[in-house]
Image (tube, rainbow, N blue to C red):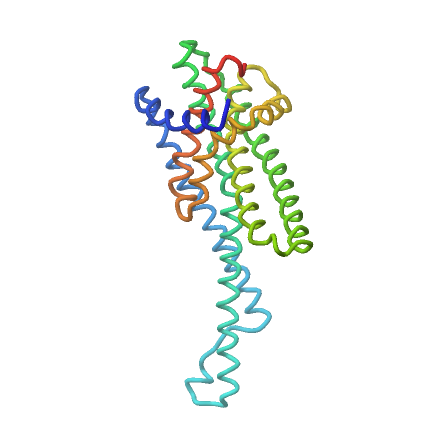
Length: 273
């Protein structure tokens, strides 16, 4: 299986969802995405307020009385610097946490939208094979926990590989400065491929879990069929790389399409089983 197979399966997933009455499963993704975004921004605001209180306790609250009463210019200037410092601290903390949110968003999506991906993957397999599995709450809960563990595992692996590539790029740039114009785009390309791979691998895990594969075996299979995994996760990775889209539309459409696409390509490709 090639990258193209995973990419085409993701495109096919749109028509499959529509023709089999599965578009309704976008609605849970909408509510979960809204809750996830609201929760993340609420946490960011709480941390920013906390940083503001620490700043105020250390340097005092900015006051414009000195400027309004025409007192010593240095006092007014001091208050201006204090106000600017408070504002800049808030901006830096907010942007830093927002950047962290964007970086973690894809794994938060995989964790919190794991139930939707698990259900869609199983429904897709039922539509393809005609075999209806009896619903088991305990099995469903186990699927969710496995999805969480898989997402955390892939997060750790991607973080390690990303740091390794970054260090390697820095060393290569220091030793061969002439290569810097080529190293930066290459690092971005490799980071994108890594992200796409882990998206696709996580979506394939639902199929392999139903076939009795353990977590370690599932990871090994994902690396064995790495080209397919990259193809499956490529559209999801593109959506997650676009500002604003990555925390609005991407979590709604990405998980559903990837989960369905992984099931379509794996259950129709005999040589993968």
